[in-house]
Image (cartoon, rainbow, N blue to C red; front, side):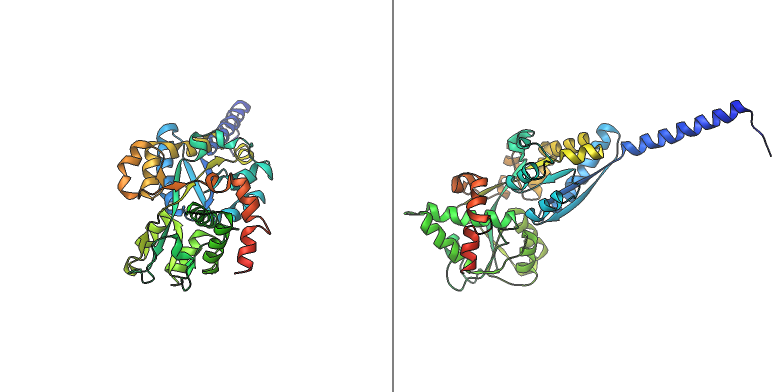
Amino acid sequence: MIFLPNSMKFMRKGLAVLFIATAMSVARADSVLLNVSYDVTREFYKEFNVSFAAHWKATTGEDVSIKQSHGGSSKQVRSVLEGLEADVITMNQAPDIDILASAGKLIPSDWATRLPNHSAPYTSTILFVVRKGNPKGIKDWADLGKPGISVIIPNPKTSGNGRYSYLAAWGYALRLPGGNESKARDFVKDVFGNVAVLDTGGRGATTTFGLHGIGDVLLTFENEIALLQHEFAAEGFIAIVPSTSIVAENPVTWVDRYVKKHGTEKVARAYLEYLYSDEGQEIAAKHHFRPINAAVQAKYANDFPSIPLFSVEDVAGSWDAAQTKHFADGGTFDQLYANK
């Protein structure tokens, strides 16, 4: 047995402590983010995450890995309120993020002022998809309420996609000559009377229409249409651009309580800021989200049909008003759908 002098024992102990401290420091340099998002952004964020991780490594020398969680927007927010520790949340409507401030106290109420364009780095809109040859001759919103048309729209109670589709139909009816609230109500009742399946989210609706062959027309975001046409190329699905539609803003934020808990505030903020970079905007455009960067908009102009768009505020005054009037329990949607 070899006995070490006390000084050497202390030196070896000190080196061991230094090694452990260094290892812990390296471990802390590697970050893990959880992005909780709505259900039709899977492919976009899969590519974006790789790009951001490379950017972060080149900029800071640190590694970062990003985990994704997807589902109907309202369901996703409830999961965060119930304890899913999202570092960032990327939604398709502000009310779902507002809940994290009002009900969960997880973020400040002024979260939308922390990033440009009200914290919405890209937008989208609702278009139609019909089957090969468009056998039912569907061209515009008015066709969706006709007898014999089977419509696929996700549930507005659980899906931002569904809420935008509902409000787009309502806004279309309001803008018709002689349009008013009563006529809009009747029209939306007719449209949802033709809805064959109310999936909880947009991806579920895509599966119902594309994989299961249910419905004559699907209402969904532009990026989902591009994916559907790619994945089911043999089906010959056709995108229909109606005469008008609604602008869908896609806000994002970091979740203050959890980034502080995880020590990820710096990287979480950088992750969302990268959405506004030229690289982030390019990836968004490639995945058929409308970029807000003017140069990238111009580059991809042919990928996005020019269509008159109105806002949620134009239709309902505000998202809060829309939620209270249309989508709260016992609201207009419940009344119309219960009596379809």
